[in-house]
Amino acid sequence: MAPMLPHTSATLCDPGKLSLELEKVRKQGFAVDDEEYIPGIIALAVPVRDGDGKVVASISAQAPTGRLRIEQAMEFLPQMKQAAESMAQTVDW
Image 1 (cartoon, rainbow, N blue to C red):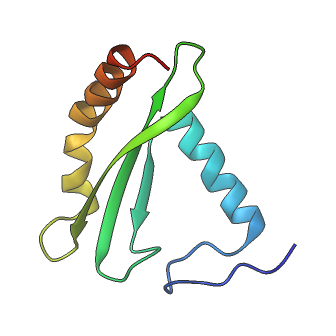
Image 2: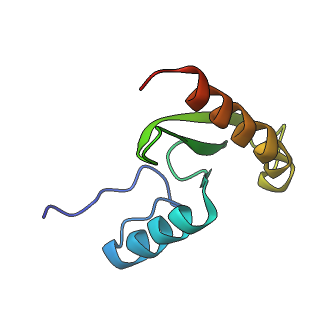
């Protein structure tokens, strides 16, 4: 496997650390990007699952770090999860 190249100083490039982060994402049901891809941008994402529980899409939100901190963005998670559930029920996957 080729080495992963960082996009920013916060990018997870160590395979072991990335595996741990992905397990954390699976357990908590959402993902956080704290300037890992674009400097000065944070993001949250939640999965949209089909009737079998398979992830078929996602809903994400991004913001500049100068306007919103991760802690503030986390307040939107309940609405994002509700939107994902509504989308899953509306679309015939």
